[in-house]
Structure formats: structure tokens, C-alpha cells
Length: 113
Length: 111
Image 1 (spheres, rainbow over the protein chains, first blue to last red):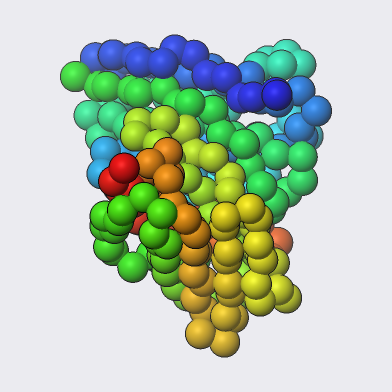
Image 2: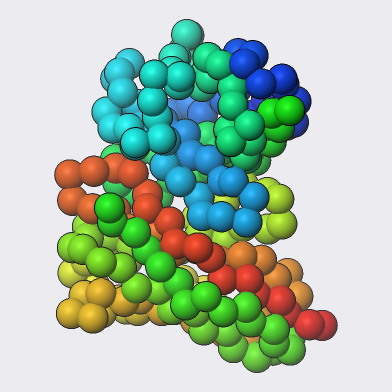
């Protein structure tokens, strides 16, 4: 069964450094998403992406964040200058249709020191 | 902003018993979905119920939706140890495609 994959599974970085989190969505899906989950808290929406552009973003997704689909398979989240509070689990998801079931990857645990 | 909110309870039940979780939300929705998360892993979609539906079944899962009370419940019948997980409701508002998650319910099924 097709699944969403994410790399790396764990990333440790120093405050102020740039990180890129990578995702390979399910191949026939058209909508892509990033969410994050700070330890012990809710899963929070960051951004959705469709047709090579951002379709929706949350208040969390400020100028420090960017997304890209550099080729036909990868979907990336870049954090330009990481802060301690960016430490969280980051989940990528994809879906065939907007607003319906989303398929999540296993997550990347980002630790900012 | 639109959010699903589960009753903040942790359930601990014996294998074979039923588990019920509730979720409430604040605004009009297009649909409501339930997801499961095993410890430290990704979320798995369980079931979706549209705003014009009142009840839906999938295997051992039964979900209800009451749009007048802005609430939903998830029932897992004949629970198994493998059902041990956190369960989240998530809502979708018309015109958006983001999922707005609740805080989650921790369910422990004791073999």
C-alpha cells in the first residue's frame, strides 16, 4: 500500500540554523500539507500546497517557513533560522481531494538546541 | 479558529469492552474525521463523517455526529490490545482543506 515517507526521522540542530525537512507524498495525490505537534500538545496545521503554490497557511507559518515541491515527488519544509520553540514533531500529509482524508507520514522529530 | 476538542479523558479498559470518546467543536463544518496515533508515530485516518450524516460505521468503529450540539462520538466495540493509542478528532470547515485537531484521548486496552 502506498504511504507517505519523511526524512530524516530525527534532526538535531542549533538555534539559528536552517533545516529542511523532506517528504515524499503518495504519488497520485494532489494536495500536500505540513503539520506540527509540540510534545504533549495538539497537532497544529502549518500549510497546505496545491498546484505548485500555497493554498492555505496558519498564523504559525511566518516568514521563517517556506515550502517547495522541487521535483515531481518531493515536498519540503524549510525553516530558515530555527528557534528553540520550533522543537516539535513535523508531519507531512497528502490527500487526493481537498478537505477529505489525509495520509500522514511517520514524522520528523526536530530538536533545536 | 475552528477546533475539534475531545473530552480530556484517558480511558483504561479491559480487552473486549467498548470505548467511547467525545469531541465538540465550535463552528459549522464540512466534515469531521477521527485519527489514531500510536505512541510517537504518524496519524492514521479512521473514519470521516460528513455534516449531513448522523452516523457511520466502519468495522468495529461507530461514529456519530450531532451538528445541532456541535459534537461527535467515536465508539470502538470489542476493544483489543492493539487499539491502545491516542485518538483525535479533526474538523474541516467549508472552503478550507486544513484539519483542525483536538487534544486527543489516550486509550489503554489491557489484555
